[in-house]
Length: 421
Length: 173
Ligand SMILES: Cc1cc2nc3c(=O)[nH]c(=O)nc-3n(C[C@H](O)[C@H](O)[C@H](O)COP(=O)(O)O)c2cc1C
Ligand code: SF4
Ligand code: FES
Image 1 (cartoon, chains in turn purple, red):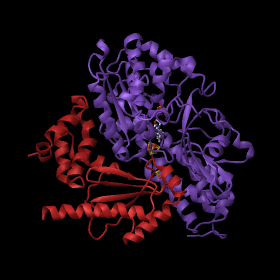
Image 2 (image 1 turned 30 degrees about the vertical axis):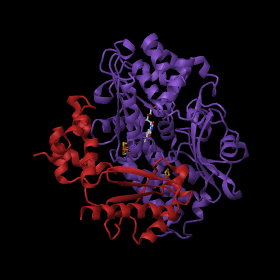
Image 3 (image 1 turned 90 degrees about the vertical axis):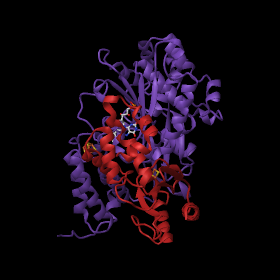
Image 4 (image 1 turned 90 degrees about the horizontal axis):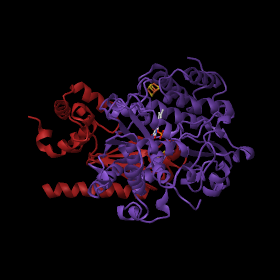
């Protein structure tokens, strides 16, 4: 794609520096919002744009902002920069190379819900990015773009970074809020939702970094302009993180509706060493395996089209798998991830991921028969619908779909005879 | 006496200022990072001091240390060499890379080199899957990424850290 909405730094060198960002209409949208628009008008613009959350669920952003009650204060906005799904590295590029567009989006979101304090929750491994954003925030304070009485109005705003410390579950928004409150990062029972009882029990918006980075251009150019990109129901562009068995892994910003074929072959350069494409995961490790053949390759990638495979676009972390990959091995890899990351709060997930991991390990060590494969399948099926948060469900997706769709891969690694005892 | 508070009064004040005064418990994670930078791990004394600053129990602080993987309550090697072997990296040779690195250093995952400087660890995705093999070095209060690695470049990174430690030792000797 020749035109970038989010990865604009690829077209504009130096965009990570404030003077350059300002030269390219930087903070014009924030200024316009604060000085010319009512908060409700900003929310309406974002609603009309059709912007949907990029953190995984695709929830309409403007609608989310409109849920905050106006009789309970203060309000908070929290940027979700926990980015920990295996195969996801897009928010990192945005924050490293186009940090001001993300910060401006966060600032506009804060104005829209009249929050005077916003936090950026960043995964601990992105230590260097937190430090970098702290510098950028200090520059904005010096430039009078953050602080008290912005543009001579009575609106004030402060931004703070908060570093996580290695826990995938803290990307789940209620676990994130617990963590930000200084507690264990374990999900809360919902309802109530963060919009009514979020950070410190106050109305809170949680949005992904990429979602927020979309906001300045929407406010600047208007919602109708935004519909020039993407599909009817999923307008705009998406940053796809492409990884695994592909010649040119990396981030690709493309309009929603781009096909697997375009992403993997035109942009990603196809699979290495003349091997053939076998399957794709679209939401990192939290994905079903979508077997790939000629007919599937032309499926558009948006929030709706992947339903027919029982899949979802999630964070658009596309892991490419070729014919050198055994799906029993892959299952063990994903299950081990979820066992490691289960927060332990609810029994089905804590115990289920433990047992799935044990079974998958035995299968891969050649110490199990098809009986154990079926048991693994049953454990996964029994977990479904019973876990407190989506992590538990995520942990079953690759297991069930790989046994359903690639049973031969399991047959290749198990023993012929059942092992008793 | 609260040694953490005495030594880092300004820094701690700046951390606490980020959160509403009635919710200062939020500062537990940044304070743990501060304590860990000081000693290489979070000592029992530091936990007690943090509990005192935030007016929460020592058990509360200890449970946070236990929950999050980037905090340590025991001394390890000064530098944690954390190699990602999660799915996308494993598809690009990360498991072989880890094996070769362990062999070259003569230790296994979880062990410390004889000079006490390096611990090798296997970690989950760190957001650099397109540049596998990758590892991060956690130590001296920082986390530094090393991407697109080979055994040679990794050993060079480790050697540079070793020399840095050696020079510091001679400097203070
Ligand atoms: C286990 C789990 C992990 C998640 N990790 C992230 C994450 O790393 N980043 C993120 O933005 N959202 C993540 N989410 C989604 C968040 O809960 C939340 O929906 C999102 O931050 C909302 O922002 P959005 O509406 O802008 O997408 C995760 C959800 C679950 C269940
Ligand atoms: S499903 Fe797993 S991660 Fe979610 S609350 Fe239960 S134990 Fe924790
Ligand atoms: S899987 Fe290794 S950095 Fe993502």
